[in-house]
Image 1: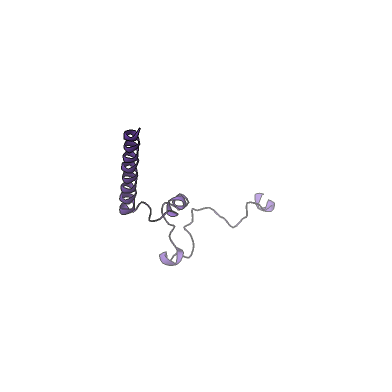
Image 2: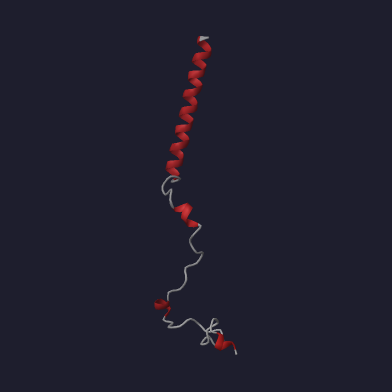
Length: 78
């Protein structure tokens, strides 16, 4: 009985040390630096849209359509 108890204590000590070393390895690699950023990363756009002030463009480029008539204005449908 005592030999099995000593074996279990040594086994639990070895497992505890192994888990502690694995945790220290993860901390050293930076796995726990930023816990909040990965869950917000999916909400970011892949490429930021160009700012109008930076590009110097006053209006977005036109595609050739006449947008002066509103799509919700029934008089413009005629």
